[in-house]
Image (cartoon, rainbow, N blue to C red; front, side, top):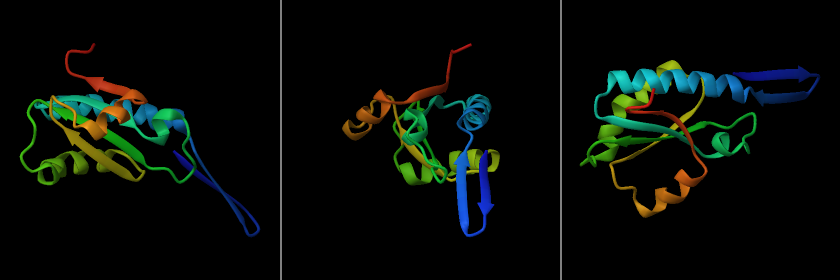
Length: 119
């Protein structure tokens, strides 16, 4: 996914976006099977918009059936699930059915990776 090329003292780092997206879609589909409460997995941030660099990480927005009481604690199993399947830095955002105002903007430029009921 991430390639590092060196030439003397110069190092070039690139990211194969197509490969990252392929692996993300696969992991997102598996996550829907593993977590019945998970409704939707979206890619947000620079990888979604195509403005990533070689050192970019993956930003995922996970929508669950019910708004979690303690989002940090609720994120833990998802973080371990995705981080074990991806060889790249990972940030997670967790939301219930109603998006908080700050996340509504992130969804506009997002890519849907998997959703419940989607074939």
